[in-house]
Length: 236
Image 1 (cartoon, rainbow, N blue to C red):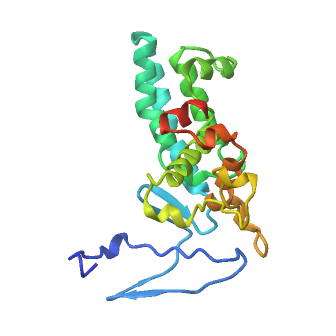
Image 2: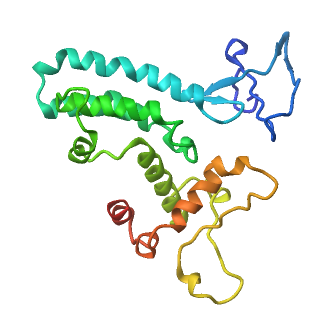
């Protein structure tokens, strides 16, 4: 920070400790000037709330709470809006917030993202001005909206495609690695990713590093070797 002439704001400084094992107790503190920074259960970074267990419970709750009132307010003025105007309004104020940094939620169980799915369901009903008990699947298909869990998976796979085609940030290259067989196999021409071993840890199954290679390797070879991002996103 000194090198780039930056000053630390002690009033907004938080310390988040993410232990290798959830049961490990830590008593780490950091002394900055006259202030002693103690660990907190969650901390905000780029408007995303990280918790010490990386379950993103606080982030999902905060996003749901923020988006819950937007559909309620749009519904009040829905009689004065056309269907197209309603869709643009919902996509700008609701869907964009649900999609923000959603790849961080890769690997979480479906129940964890259920609050976000309920927000998307309410948004779809508002666009078509439908009552609460309306079946959602036809509405989502008409809007070309993937369910929240599928949107997270699609976003993660697009990052994987960009990593393989060298169109992603450099730091993703160390997270996702292309599989290179040690001898000549039929799979050497496929764009497969290395799935890290879970030996010795159970928490790896919930991480981007483990989930995305599994999803990617399940894709057909024609999608994995797509010539362009447009072609990849169209067939995925």
